[in-house]
Image 1 (cartoon, rainbow, N blue to C red):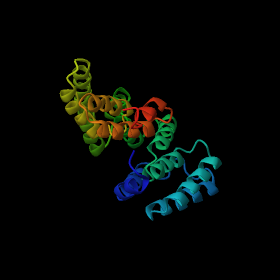
Image 2 (spheres, one colour):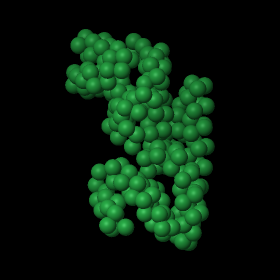
Image 3 (cartoon, rainbow, N blue to C red):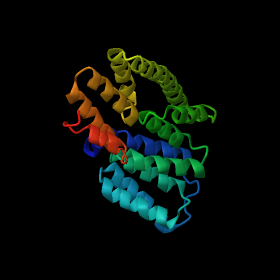
Image 4 (cartoon, rainbow, N blue to C red):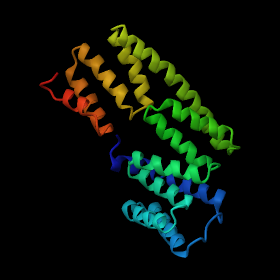
Length: 233
């Protein structure tokens, strides 16, 4: 998974736009429930825009503690997690936002994009389709349509790669899986499969790199961890 510092550098410039979009769509809606919660949200927003991610996250935690049904707090905490490179933590918060505010298309679109990176293609496609059915903005409609087409193409490429592997055509399989991993960067299963292609092509160093990445992506992936040890290969 992308290192937090690299992810923050890449994504922070985009998050102020997300927050502005959020405020334009939902300014004044369901706010004012609790003055302390509002203060935490505002302070967290300012800290997030300033790049003080840990402090921002602390305020969003406090906002959620004060009002567990405040979808704004979950959305902004998800934004902080994403800026810190903690996508796994962001997904449950985005899911909570969608549960509390089903018509919040921005949260659903973001969750779909994260699921796509994890290789959860069916779940991602469902989110993109729901966005398109929920009266999205022009930009959201364009993005959801693009992501849905990309997911569909990846589905086909993934199937072709697995078929090539099963036929022991490891060179072709590797080439196809490379394409999948350009988008599904956090797909542990495809990394493991590509590692097997490398092993069968006599490239253990490349296999070790993929297996180590897979072991980090799946906390319970002890098989990939032990496979990644040089003496095993």
